[in-house]
Amino acid sequence: MEPRTTRSLPRICVIGAGHGGSAMAAHLALMGLPVRLFNRSEARLRPILALGGIELITRDIEDAPYGLAEPELVTTNLAEALEGAALVMVATKRNGHRSIAEQCAPYLRDGQVVVLNPGITCGAIEFHSVLREAGVKADVTIAEAQTFIYQSRMLNPAQVRIQRIKNGIPVAAIPASRTPEVVRLLNAAYPQFVAGENVINTSFDNVGSAFAPAVTVLNAGRIESTHGDFEYYVEGVTPSVARILEAVDRERVAVAAGLGFRSISAREWLSVAYDATGSNLYEAMKSNRGYQGIKSPLTTNHPFITEDVPMTLVPIASLGERVGVPTPAVRAIIHLASLLHDTDYWREGRTVERLGLSGWSVEQIRALVLGE
Image (tube, rainbow, N blue to C red):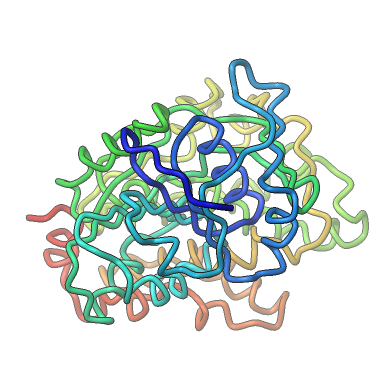
C-alpha cells in the first residue's frame, strides 16, 4: 500500500495486528486518519496486503464506519512505521510490552506519544524504564489506557469485527502532568479517552485483571472437565470463591494505599460501572446483569493466567513487598497458577526489578508517577 498524507490529523502508528490492533488500525483508517500498521510477523500481514486492507464489520454499533479500511502503510519495518508518527498505539499482548519497548527505543523521536492499550498493571512504568535503560534521549511521553477501547475479534486473517466500543476510558501519562496533552492528542480520533489521575490508578483500578486469575485457578477442574461450558462469573463465582476474590481485592487496594494512592474497591467499581450492589462482593457480583452470559475460557491456557498473573498479580505483590504491605492471597494465586502451568510466573512477571524500581522509596516512585 502506498502511503497517503492527511496533514490535518495526527499520523498514528498501530503496533500489533491481532484482534485489537487490526480493529484499531481499520477503525482509525475508516475515520480518515493516516494510519500505519506494524506487525513483527510478515505472515500476519500477508493477507491484509493481498486484500489491500482490512475489512471491518461493525453492524451492531450505531454510526460506526465499516467496510474495507486501507491503512497508509502496512509493514514489518518498525523504523518506517514510527517515522513521523505523532501517536504510537501499542495493541499487543501485555507480556510483550518490554519487547516492544526494546524494539522501539532506537527509533523514537522528540514529541512522540506512546500509549499502551491497555497498560494492564504498571505497563507504562515498565516501558518507561526500558527506554531509560536503553539510553533513549528523545523527549517521548509514555502513557497507558486502563482498558482496551474495543471488544473485537478477528473473523479471518484480514477481517475483523468490533462488537463494542467502550466509553470513558481513563488514560494517564508519565508524569501525570503530561496526561492532558496525551488526552488532547487521543481525542483527535477517540472522544472516549478521558484523563485518569495517574498511572498507578490506571494500573490498580483495572479490577478485572486482578479477579480473572483467581476465578480461573479456582475453577481449573471445572474448566478442564467441561471445556469451559459454564457461565464464568455467574456459576464460577460461589460464596467461597468470592471470599477469596475479596481478599485479593483488599490487598490490591492496600498496596495502592502503601504507595500513597487511593484505588477503587471492587464493590465500588461494580456500583459505579454496573449499578450492582450488595452487602458483600458475592452479592454485588450476582446482582450485575453484565456478567450474565459470559462463558468461561475453554482452557486454563488463557490470558487470564498467562498474561494477567505475571503482568497484574506479580507487580501488585512485588510492590507490596517494596512498601511493606503483605499480599498472601495474591501470592497464593500466583503460586497456584505457576503450579498449574509448570511456569514460574514470578520470574516472568513485572517485579520491582523489571519495573526499574528496585531500591526506590515511595517518595521516588511518587515523583516518577506524578512528576513532583
